[in-house]
Length: 373
Image (cartoon, rainbow, N blue to C red; front, side, top):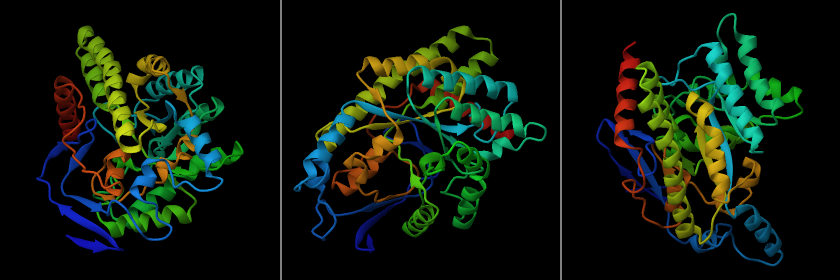
């Protein structure tokens, strides 16, 4: 136990191997570090945990801002989509066949547009760099902009910050903005959001703080995640079934994926009420994959039936909850877990829903097989 910059931190060593988080199957590998702070701060300019739970310190003139944030917050969600121009089964780094990527991006962008879910897609520009296909792959990003959607930076090569040197991680952010920034500029926009691959924001406080400062210098805001639905697990299960020509398992993967969406939203709503005493705007992470080509329309319809309004990432982040400090250091977890440290709450990664074991088994099997290829 020790102190960094006035904040108490505790180092927890995890055993080697793949562990699942308490939320929805995000992988934790190697050592984790939890940075903790006192439940209530008395330092001027830093809000207390109680004030954060109430949605911000109350002061004269604050009520109008608070009521406006509450209007957005009542069952609202921003949709964020990772790994453009395409997330392939079994391998996070696969380039994919152009025709397959075209089908995925037509389906995903069309579903978002049909539901007026003005999402943001996070790009790995490495997947654009296929000889003879660069223009065609860039057109997939243009398709998103023409559908009224946004684009963000997801690192050039989908580097994992838990095992990538800070200098390379910074370099790959810059490499990952070349094409996207040009497209956004032509559309009268600019790139302003960064999403960490695997949600890994740094394995030490020093690395995390240094990269956060680098992001700020380049005008980026971190795109947090409060809900993810393990679509990458179900996508692998679906692909495996299709390869085996097993229609029954393919149908099961889609059905149980949509059921799992309800499970994770139920849990996140419960967490929101316990942590903030209200429903904050959620930020959902899904992937640009074949599963969502088939299922995203039904997923968005399901959320509408739950009473959700789709909002932009800008609107979600305007809620005071997102000003809660992120004091966590370690392998990737969701932001509602991270915030527990600032709120003086216990962080228990064993709690929460997990994808069905049969889909997890297929996921693990496919990843091992593809890594050998």
